[in-house]
Image (cartoon, rainbow, N blue to C red; front, top):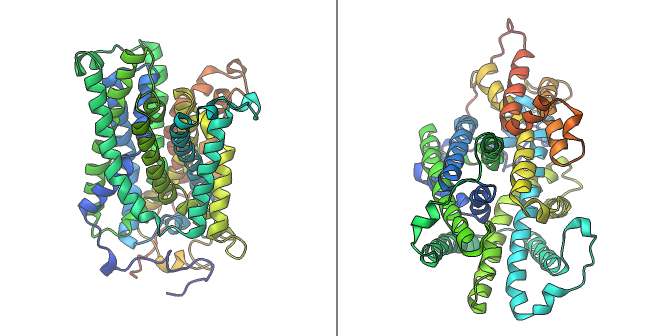
Length: 488
């Protein structure tokens, strides 16, 4: 296969058939492992914090993950058929150079998740240390009040951030043992929290599951729709770069069935624990405590709290490096390999992760769902619409492998960029901008018609279908676009 050095590497090369060994249960295990994380717990409990009762929250999560499973499997088929990762797959629709656009959008979202995970780990350390050094919680404020950042948590956050950067500097091989620790610790910790909730509330599960919904009629729908969009947005990144995993599948059935078994059920079951525990905090403390780290800080035994918080920090470190550093660091390095190596890419990821103010995003359910999850889904939904439309409706699932790795081939377009895809991407993002600006209070809700602003509640869906339809219409219907599949 003749390839251009700037487009080809061993990591990006198609996986030969003999090395595609992932079975159905490998994919099921992958999703079970990725679903068992603190943000999943917070995702569920944030719905309780927003006013839903337990079954409304569980159904919202189940429906959201079932919906996102569809583009997940559709995008995954290209990876399984050709053995190619996401950046290479994106070259077919965006061009061999233009593929950097969706790759960077995905990378920026990963930076945001890095910031959120780092804040969770840093705050866990703060909860442990302040029990032994009480003065840490009464340090004078040194940051502007608008930042909403107390000095003690900020110090622990920055220390944990430095620990993440140190691991990046050393390399990611050492993180494997931490991932094994996480796989054992988080399920046990989740079950322990569930046991605590059931035994702490008089009457057990009964009173917990009979907590009423605080959302009725229009107020329910105004919360449910963006919440459902947020549930889809939670895995919107993986719905794009799922070819990075399916390229190792032994068959199309293996990854399709494995993901169906692993994603919706595991997200729903782990979320149920978050729902039950958060509902219990309403009965015990008079208010929903949707952050498990904050909840653990209310326990009385200092040693138990300290050990739990240290374990949370270690498992968060493992997840953060594996899920939120490796991919964006490589994406940034790919922009200019001569100037940006993996370490520099990791540093860029870390800095951007701080600049999004993650402590403000997860300070309340509104910021977590409406600003973060719905906001970035408005960027990734359009990319998904273009990828699926191009692969299934334009190319009829036929790609030329050799042309994906050359600057002078079918996917060169204009200077390596397919402007049809870029313009369609912008058109898909455009309808959601007014609602986003209203959500972050940059414009008044009265400045534009209500129906325009309300589109933001459907951000992922609006972007997906607008971009997909615009991209399809941009092609001449009379012109057949066919490419011959070339086996590697």
